[in-house]
Length: 413
Ligand code: CAA
Image (tube, rainbow, N blue to C red; front, top):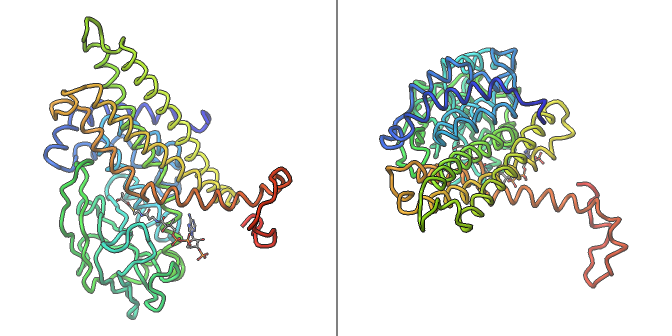
C-alpha cells in the first residue's frame, strides 16, 4: 500500500489545508460562500491535476492519491473536501467514457484549474434509482436537444462544464440502456442554473437545480462512440468517486477527533483533564481505532480501483470495495464527529467552536454518491453472488427442507 502513496502530494495538500482552508472554513460556512481563494490555491499548487491522466495535462496519480488530497483538505474543512473532489466526479465520465478528442478538449483545462466541472445525474424523482431519468436528450440533425431538470447538482453555477445524463431512447425509459451522457458548457442557450439549496453542511460548495429548455449541444458532445452508454459510464464514475467521498468522511472524522482529543487534554473537571476519566479516554481510544480501520479500508478500496483500471478482471472486486469503503468510512465519520461534539459538551453545540461543523459536514457523506442503503445493496448483491463459490461447505451443513437445488444456483454469476 505504502508504495502507492505519494507523500509529497500529501504534504502539499496539508500545506494548502493549514495555510488557506482552515483559517477560512468557518467564514465560508457561515456565509455559504464558494471559497475562490481556496480554489486558486488548489490550482496554483497543482492539486487539481492529481487524477487527470498524464496525456491530458494531469499528474495521472490515480485514486489512492486523490483520496490522500481529499482527506487532508477535509481534515480542515469537509466542504472544501467535496468542493475539490466533485471535479473528479464530474470529469470521470470524460476520462472513462469520452473519446480521445473529447479528452483533449476538456481535461487539460480542468487539470490546470481554468475550468470546473460537475456531475448531473440525479433528478427530483430519480435518486437511488439512477436509471429512472426523465430528462430527454433527443437527436435532431447534428445536435442533441436537452429538456428536463436536474437536482442536487454540486458545483452548480460555479462549474463551467456539466456531465449531463438523460434518456436518448424514450421507448426504453426506466432502463439503463436508454441513458446517454453529454457535456454541456455553461452559457449554452436553454441551460439555466436554478435554485440554490440552503444546506446543513458542506456550505462552501453550491448545490443547485439545473434547468434545460430546448438546450442544444453539438452531437460531438455525446460521450462515447454511440448512444446508450450513459448508465455504465455513470456507474463506473461512481465506483471511482466513492473512495473520494469515503476520504472526505475520513478527513472529517480525523479533524473532529484531533479537536476532541486536544480539548479533552486541556478541559478539567473533577480536578483533572477529562481525558483521564475512563469514560472519555476509552471513547477517544474507540474513535482513534475506528478511524484507523476506516483509513485502511478507504485506501485499500482506492488501490483496488487503480488496480482494476489496469486489469478489468478486478472490476467486480473494486465495485464491492468502493461501496464498502464509502459505507464504513461515512458511518464512522458520523459516529466520530457526533462523539467529538459530546466530548466538547455544551461548547460542542455552539457555533463558536469548530466541532459541530464537522458533524454537519459528515452527514451528507452517508447520503450522496449513493446512500449507504444503496452501498449495502451493492455489497449484498456481491455477497449473494460470492456464496455460490462456497458450495464446498454444503457437506458440513445438514440438509433442510426447501434447500435450493444446485442447478438453480448460478455458479459465479
Ligand atoms: N460498472 C459497470 N456497469 C455497471 C455497474 C458498474 N459499477 N453497475 C451496474 N452496471 C451495469 C450492469 O452490468 C447492467 O448492465 P446490463 O444491463 O448490460 O446487464 C446495468 O448497469 C444495470 O445494472 P443493475 O441491474 O445493477 O442496475 P440497478 O437499476 O439495479 O441499479 C444501483 C444499480 C447500484 C442501485 C444504481 O442505480 C446506483 O448506484 N444508484 C445510486 C445512484 C447514486 O449513487 N447517485 C448519486 C448521484 S451523484 C451525487 O450524489 C453527486 C453529488 O452531489 C456530489
